[in-house]
Amino acid sequence: AQSVAQPEDQVNVAEGNPLTVKCTYSVSGNPYLFWYVQYPNRGLQFLLKYITGDNLVKGSYGFEAEFNKSQTSFHLKKPSALVSDSALYFCAVRAPGYSSASKIIFGSGTRLSIRP
Amino acid sequence: DTGVSQNPRHKITKRGQNVTFRCDPISEHNRLYWYRQTLGQGPEFLTYFQNEAQLEKSRLLSDRFSAERPKGSFSTLEIQRTEQGDSAMYLCASSPPWTDSNYGYTFGSGTRLTVV
Image (cartoon, rainbow over all chains, first blue to last red; front, side):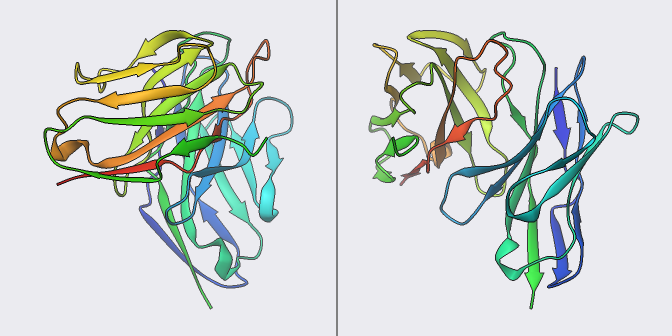
């Protein structure tokens, strides 16, 4: 069964500094990996995904994520943080293939706080 | 099409009452998912439909929970004899019918249930 771990409950970064939100996964086969963001009292918004190809994936709002197969990681990054990036971030994984078992499984989330 | 729509946005109910939530997915999406999210946690998978067929149910979905998607369009999630532990955000998501559906889900804004 697939699983996702987000080892940090909270990440604090000063505005303008680079940020990293960590994620590791476990899945059989080549994974489909996702990052979602959630603002207060809102649903989840899709940020980016890795399916295949380049290990560095670019997404919305200047975010990018690096897939590392040997370390089974998919860390979210941004070169220069904005106060408006403050939100709850979820890493998610899905096993490959078109089957009913291929649902997306979410991590527990990391709260990102950007101070001015 | 304005995305995935969920109603109501908020529901407060007394313990023991029944509640029903509705989800309207993106019109061309044939897959529909229900998740539950408690405070500070990631979304947990509840159940999944492909068209009108309910293909998977989580063990989290007790006998008090039932979901339907009678015409393969909108879906309802009913909770009977609500308990305080049912208090959570209930999220609906949909995805398109591509052969290898590797696309991330589109989420609705959720229905927040409070059982008092």
